[in-house]
Image (tube, rainbow, N blue to C red; front, side, top):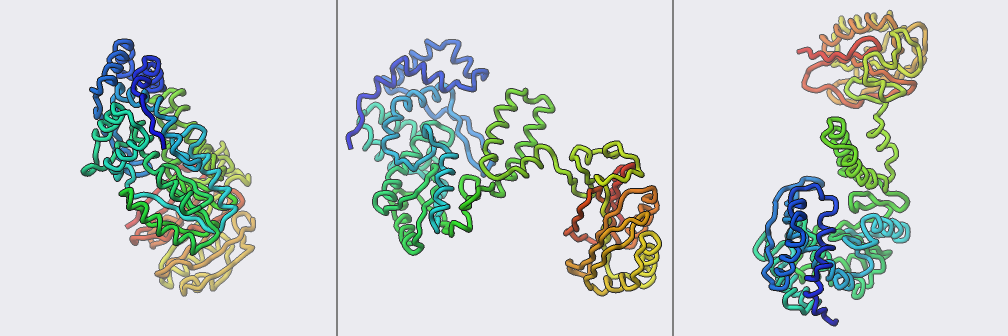
Amino acid sequence: MKRAGNLIEKIADCDNLYLAYYKASKGKQTKEEVLEYGRNLQVNILSLREQILSGNISVGNYHYFKIYDPKERLICAASFPERVLHHAIMNICHPYFEKTLIYDTYATRIDKGIYKALEKAKRAMNSYQYVAKLDFRKYFDSISHETLRQKLSTKFKDEQLLAIFDKIIDSYEDSPQKGIPIGNLSSQYFANFYLSEFDHFIKEKLKIKIYVRYMDDMLLFSNKYEELKQQLILLHEQAEIIKLTLKPVVLNKTRQGISFLGYKLFPHKILLNHRSKLRFKTKFNTYQKYLEENIWDEKKYQQHITPLLSFVQQAYTKRLRKEIIEGSNRVLRGGSWNNNAKNCRVSNRNNNTPDNRNNNNGFRLLLAHKKLSDDLLMEQMTFLHSNYGIKNEHLFSQINECQPIELSSLHGFEGEKFEMNISSPFPQEKHFINRRFQPTERNETLRDETRRFAQQEIAVGFNLRGNEYRRSRQPLSGGKSKVSVKRADVKQENVNYN
């Protein structure tokens, strides 16, 4: 392959340097270092031109900080003059790096990107039976300086340019002669270029037709399981040649799905993986807080929230987005139920009076108890019989013996009918009874009774809700009982009894 030469003059051309300044300052015009550089722009551009031509460039002036999303990484933010240098180099060298890459590489390329990679991977999930996911262990920190220099010398023959590359490479190392800084524009090009030979081996030697790579995340598709396993063995050997280590390979049937770039891909749908869901919820709430507290103005908020929503909209997340953005109609931990999420946040929900009988609010009774004494058992049977119309004499005796019970058409307040299911899915003789009632003036008596029950190691909870009902799946622990009461006219109380 013919090597590129005579590029240093093009890199040092003033028009190219001004273009590099524009690209490096995009979106950062209000930062002090950018403003300072722009105040003496012509002088700084001429100084940078002289440094490039003489080879006496200043690199390695990094600001180090860590990020923890989605995992811990050390970021090396170069100074602004150095970022202008990186842009100036890549403005000219970009076409030569681009020529070495295969079509199926999607990171840091024009008209490519994460969503194009997802589109191709989703189409392949519909057409192939098996998919393998490959990923290198600590990829940026494992890139060999010696191997990278060798690869660059096969592409460029300009000695001054190669000397600049050497200085940029040597400005950082995670271990002796290994690692390139995360956060540099040059590092993105180097990292993508470093795996170019690996890409050609997959496509030209192994003859894998469908292959998708986004930086060091790779998917390989095949209809032949054994053949794909043999190809993966050869890829491990190829990784050793370029001094990288592959993580354990994930080999699945496509119908089982595969995690890729924060998504879970299936043949006919794309979902967010668990970590991405948590990230979306955390970031959205954080951005909302910054906007409400005037830490961010609307413009900055929009700059952050737009890519976040764009990311989750690539997957089937309609319900998730609605719950997080608009709020859920259910408030956990003893909260309320309503047909409007906002009405769950107030004591007097939807301005309803305590005797309101609409179907958009109600509450759920939950009793959890240990094995009861005969006296307490009889006391509870009498209470439920007199207040709720429960006439089954064997109800609590069966519960006490850990037997599942199903009752229906039981009479509740003011003669209204509700269904109650009783089961014992919990160990250690702990059981839950679920029943839904409408709020009435008799709730005050019920609240007093539930507090008395709580003193006997019985927990009672109420949740306002609409027509449907759910059973709580979380038993009590630690031997402590709680009372959680929510009514249309009474604010929430949480009481612990020893």
